[in-house]
Length: 184
Length: 146
Image (cartoon, rainbow over all chains, first blue to last red; front, top):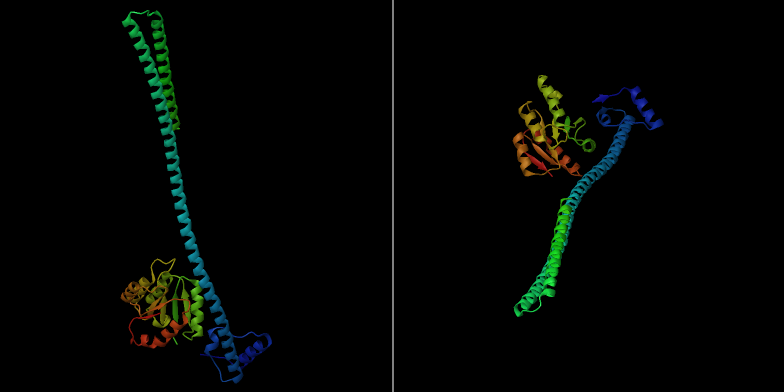
């Protein structure tokens, strides 16, 4: 316990009355006195201090609550950001797969078309070859004049062979171009 | 009233809450706060090396369970105070956690009480204050205030 002399007590009371400056904190709780006026002064100081502490406690608790909420919000934001990043990566992967699929589909269609063209072209070539050869053989068999059909047959075969190589060349060219694009 | 208290908690805002609550509830007039388990251990080490003067030590120690910036947690601090620096204090945990497993570990380390830290801490501190003499006289076992 602390005991103040009369002069100090007087100074403390005067200071409070003139400038409203009083003792603060737990020190006021450990001062002993018989002076009624100083007792009242001490009670006022303790009451003021308690009032200030109550206010501070309320504000501090509010800040604490806000801090907790902010921390939670920050954690939630971080979680959402991570989820967004993961979703973005997934979307990029899906995009790549879709692009690959589309490319594959385009190539497949292209090859199917080329295949069809080749089949039709070869069918026409073979058919014309057969028909011409058949007519030529027929004329030889019946002993007719083969001069016209002979030159027609050789011309026809020349043209058909040229066309065949031309088709094969075109197909090889397309295939080579496709391969080169894939490598890029 | 408790003669003197040491609070070990990494949250500076809680130091203010605890100080004001202790003053308003007349729990103690002498409160010291530190922010890490290492600081608290250093203090106890000095007291222990200084011929173990019990009058220099706080009468009661409140320790947070997990402290950022500490090399070890609150339970380890309690264990060290009890088993390495000669005990002589009433010591327990003050934490927002209420895990029975952690509480069992705290009991093993020598904790005497566990106060659950929430927004409204005053009623728990008031209950603890009422029980304090029982702790002092060794008449009460580990208790959780929640």
